[in-house]
Length: 68
Image 1 (spheres, rainbow, N blue to C red):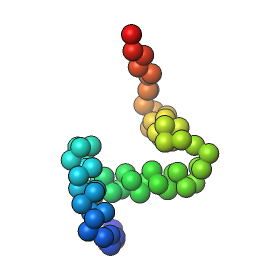
Image 2 (spheres, rainbow, N blue to C red):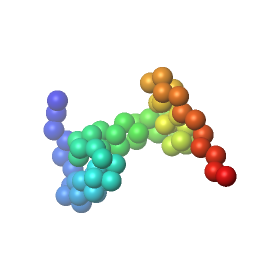
Image 3 (cartoon, rainbow, N blue to C red):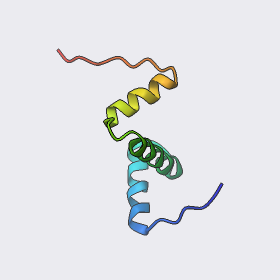
Image 4 (cartoon, rainbow, N blue to C red):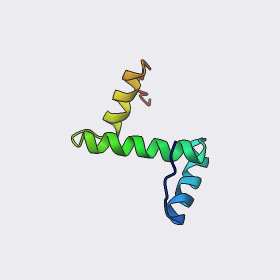
């Protein structure tokens, strides 16, 4: 495991997002890094496409919620 140097404002943004997303600061940073890497590797995919594909690979069934 290595150390990643980030500026104080980005660290604060990660801290705030981690509390909303109920993740540790490290888990939030890891999530953003992974999503960013996937987005760069798949520029034609939307965020929703990327998440749907990741869920599919994890064998998670995702159903659409339809409002009444």
